[in-house]
Amino acid sequence: MTIYHPPQFWKGKKITLGVTGGIAAFKAISLASYLTKSGAQVKTCLTKNALSLVGKSSFEAVTGEKAYVDLFEGGGEILHINLVRESDAIVVVPATANILAKAACGIGDDLLSTILLVDPGKVIFAPAMNVTMWNNPVVQDNLKKIVSRGMKVIYPVSGSLACGEEGAGRLPELEELVEGIFYYLYPQSGLEGKKVLVSAGATREWLDPARFISNPASGFMGGALASLARAWGGEVKMVVGHVTSRLPWGVEVRRVETAEEMKSALEEEWKESDILFMNAAISDFRPLSFYPSKIKKEGKEELTITLVSNPDILSGLAKNKGNKIVVGFCAETNNPREEARKKLQRKNVDMMVANLIAQGESGFDTPTNKAWIVDCRGGEKELPLLDKRDLAEEIVSYLFNHFLG
Ligand SMILES: Cc1cc2nc3c(=O)[nH]c(=O)nc-3n(C[C@H](O)[C@H](O)[C@H](O)COP(=O)(O)O)c2cc1C
Image 1 (cartoon, helix red, strand yellow):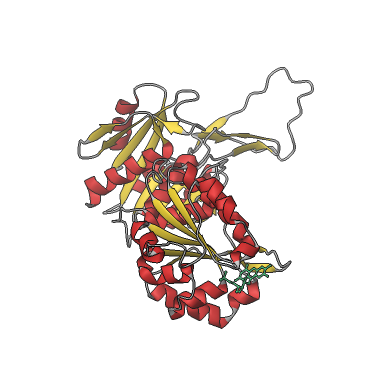
Image 2 (cartoon, protein in one colour; image 1 turned 120 degrees about the vertical axis):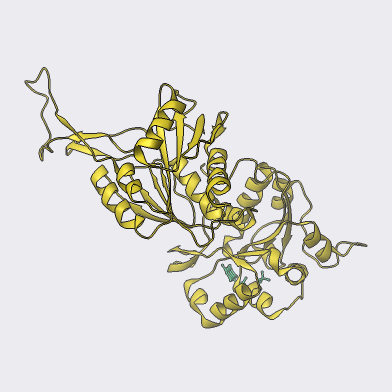
């Protein structure tokens, strides 16, 4: 399962998970389990109505922690204050229309609603409900109040709802919930107000309707960069070719297929952007001709295909970049550092990340990468073999510290 956050991010985090009486309450069990397995301490607090839909013991079993329902079950301790004091975040999944109304009005008539009154800055809601409930102006007014008071919201998505209707109100999937919570908890900032463009995935250059030239890029590195740049505060857009990894939560995506399409999409988006991470694996060559019918094998011992060079998109975008920042990527089998330095100068980019193509360990379609960062001011950093999500963090921090900080 691809979830974009540095792998160690949840280690030692303390989360109070609020569960309310929504039909999606069972999905909070997977969330509790994922966060616990990732190293967080998760204490669950359920409303009485949630208990009609899920069992308290499910949460106790997956988190290894006691789950609470009653305001007074702390015995001598003041549970609602202590839980908030010790938590990095109070995450309410799913959040009913009822709990949103209570939070908007300051009602504290049970343990969870009282917890929400203690420190609004720590509260993250993931509302989920029937579409007409969601569109009810009173619910939307309550949301506005909640947001204006510093509480955070992971908005529901559109889709088929448990009630049989279609529309907005569906709880996002586990990956999106985790990335939403990560986004709000990530401690770094500095890309606020910056428009960040990330290209990712592989282009496909078609020879005939059945065959194309491509490469094994999965889009995972680009997804990790986009997610991290967003967590740093950037407004992120992706232009993606073919990808096998899912794309991160909260990022606008534009899809393309060929190098030519990638070029025109990036040229258009670049006009409005401040930073480019050129991570897509773009085919250097394309077939000279496209055969509209499938080329038949019969009677052919050999087939010669003429390839022509694709445009160098990175150089084109970096040529007149002015104050914008361009980060290029190159995948090399030999001397990655030296190759990166040559390309850095030739292509007029600010930073070049070279990664080693080593089957199964680094490069295409692997969860890890061995990389070198070189920059136009002479700086460089050799990195060990890293999870691509950690590498994304290294790249974004390097960019911030050397070009923006
Ligand atoms: C089967 C069932 C499913 C429900 N699902 C939702 C839901 O998804 N979202 C919601 O806002 N309310 C839902 N409700 C209504 C809430 O349970 C109700 O408003 C309740 O008072 C919420 O209490 P709580 O916020 O204290 O948990 C559902 C009710 C039932 C009976």
